[in-house]
Structure formats: C-alpha cells, structure tokens
Amino acid sequence: MTLPTDIGIIDTMLGIPSAERDHWYDFMKPLLLDAESREQFSMPAQYMFNVPELEDIENGLAYTLQQMDSFGVERAMLGISGDASRVHESALRSHPDRFFACYAANPNLGMEEVRRIRDMKERFDIKAVTGFPSGLVPQVPINDKRWYPVYAACVDLDLPICLCVGVPGPRLPMEPQKVEHLDEVCWFFPELRIVMRHGGEPWTELACKLMLKYPNLYYSTSAFAPKYYPQAVIDYANTRGADKIIYAGYYPMGLSLERIFRDLPAVPLKDDVWPKFLRDNAVRVFKL
View 1 (cartoon, rainbow, N blue to C red):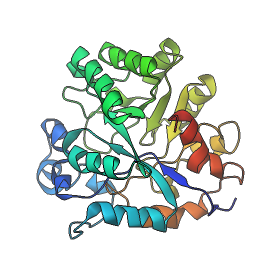
View 2: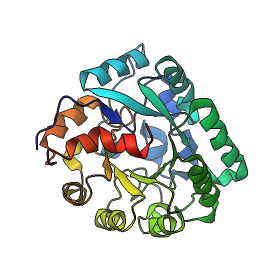
View 3: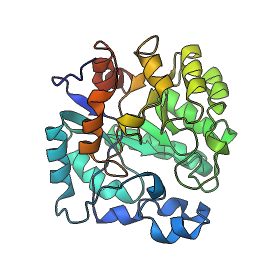
C-alpha cells in the first residue's frame, strides 16, 4: 500500500493560474443568489477550500510545469472553453507532450454545441467532453433530453464525457447532479464512457453500485483532497473497481499539488491498484 514514485502520473483535472482566473466562474453567477458567493468568494465553493494563493506568479505555465515535475505528474488535462481557454490553448500548443485537452459542453445550445464539439476534436484533438449540470444556465439534469445530442456526439467521436455528480460545492441546486440520473444514461448509451467528477457525495455507495452494474461508468477523484476520498470509493478500488477509479486533482481551483501529494501516501490503496489509479486507467479511458 505504498505510493509508487516511478509512475508518470496523469492528472485528469488541472488548470494554469493566470489573470483570467478571476473570471473562471462568471458563467454561473446568475445562479448564485447569496451575497457571500457573489461578492466575497474568489471561487464559488471557497467555504470548502483553502484556495492556493497564486496571484503573484508571473508565469503561470512555467510555475505549473515546475509543480508537475516536482510531484511526478507527466501529463495533465486542460479545459479549452470559458475564460481560461487562451492560456490553456497556448499551453497545449507549446507543450503537447505535457498537456491534452477537454471541452466543457453546454447542452442548452443544441446542435450548435454538437458542431462545436466536432470542431474542438478537429482543432485540438480533445480527449474528453466535460459537463457541469448544476452550473449551467439554465441547469440541465444529467438525464435531460438536452444532453442526448452531446452524448451521441461523444459516442460518434469515441470521446468520454466527464460529468460533475453529487451535491455541488457552489451554492446551487443539486437536483441536476443526482447520481441516480446516471442509471438511465448508462443504460441508453452503453458505448459512452462516462467519468464521474467531484465526488458524488452523499451518494458514493450508489456510485459504486452503478459502476459495478455498468462497464462504461468510471469515477475520478477531482476536487477532493486525498484525505477526504470517500471510503466507499477506496474500498471499491481495492476490490472489484481497480480499473474504474481515475486520479484527478483540483489545481489551482481549490487545491495545490503540494497538498494533494502530501495526503496521497496515506490513502490505503493496494500496491497493484496504484499504477491503475495514477496512470493506466486514464490512458485507457481517455485513449492516450
């Protein structure tokens, strides 16, 4: 149960700090009704995190690469939509050996978004589509018909979709992200690889049950310090789910790599699970 040090780790959720960071969450502001979230927080779930102080960094890309090197992160997935796109697109072009792309879809845009996904695949060879059901304006539940063209496009392009599930950190309604909604989608789209993001709490036992039921459903550890990985997920990874659990961080949105890798050695994964968790499962699911 020792954390290995000779694996080229793949981080399936990472960002690059920049001045644009102040606007990363503007898209959800219409849904934030409390004054603290709208006026005081630098990120909408700040009450849950000690957000890394990175404002004084002159070169966010160089700093991020240095941090990745320090903790053995070989490659990382960057989003190329929203206000972070310019910095991330530059990093993808200048360091294709270190970064690969994902695209955050908005199913409210219908076929326009399907065409956009195809364009992103052509231009950036995106390896995944992502979705934040509770953060969309208007919100779109995981099993809503508006998602279905996006899901179909992912199947056609052989792309996984990473969906936030569980109670959202920002003070937004949770209904769109109930884990039970995945049952219908996994059933109707057996060819669609679905990766759960952001914990799935308080329905982690249900998440593990659905992963056992559906071979196309996976779980990533994004937005959780390793100290707080759900016990049900650890138990599942150590038994029948070794091929289903994928490492993801949350730098610089809410966690530093230093914090993540300080906690990781205490996670009680079996020796044969660590390589799958840190690298092999990501390589297979994201076709890297």
